Length: 365
Ligand code: UDP
Image 1 (tube, rainbow, N blue to C red):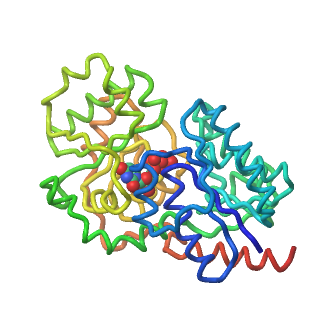
Image 2: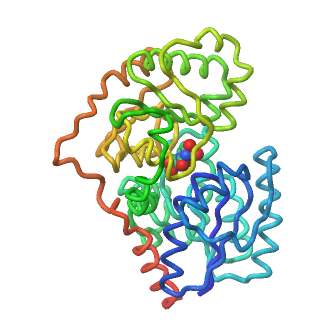
């Protein structure tokens, strides 16, 4: 069996690293393809170093552009890679444009596609990732899910039960494998932060950062919260760009202790949020990471494709209205009794379960 593994953007790397390692340990032939969707060093290279991922075998270098231009360029370049490599399987993770583009190419070339993190649905088609999720799942032969609700979504869409494999959350493999190694990160000392006495913020969804009134409202709420608890904000390049020209933003300066930081590497960021009192975010991944760690998460969105983080975890949806965000942050008690356990199969062994399935699949086909 020869596998082409695809990554393209920040949230892909922590989902792919454990799989690459496990395939290597089992002696399965694989190549890593990086589309170049994210190309800034602090959104890409640092993750290869921190997660000890091998350099990509193939770099497509598609760079910036509109979503359609990016998808088209990835498809053309990846088609050539598939023709040259003739893999038995294409593995895609998550829900970014690279995930969509490469699964389409695989399907057109009649190469089976495996989707890791299948079945997540926000039921909000205005969210760019939602269309990607639906299409990728429809095209995939093997669908690896991390929760029962994902299986139910897929069954409701008519996907055959035998294609579904509930294997758990592969991002948690990376988290669990690297948590101890974060002791070496100097980030808390550098920022003069005490464990449990600050909050962490990330924000990057277009619906939050590309609409000036929404972004200004969120920033006002964050500054209010920062008067009660210091906040450190890992600022995505998209958000930094929007903040620069945001009318009314200057008037908030000096209200509370809110510090803007550039995007951080995996280990520094893990050290930061794993020691925090609460996280405020619109990131999908962070909703899960905080649930695993038992840290309060306030999600600055109206919906989530990860309802298990609310039902069984530490997440609460605050929407994007300032008063609701402040109220949700205040409602975070930080207290979790000793009986708190993360969702089933979020245990650091998901990559092994995926490779078990792949080995059986390779024999049967
Ligand atoms: N992350 C990171 N450094 C940062 C911000 C986020 O390492 O400065 C990690 C975060 O812990 C999670 C992933 O990046 O593992 C989430 O990526 P992102 O929020 O870009 O995408 P989403 O999860 O929303 O798809």
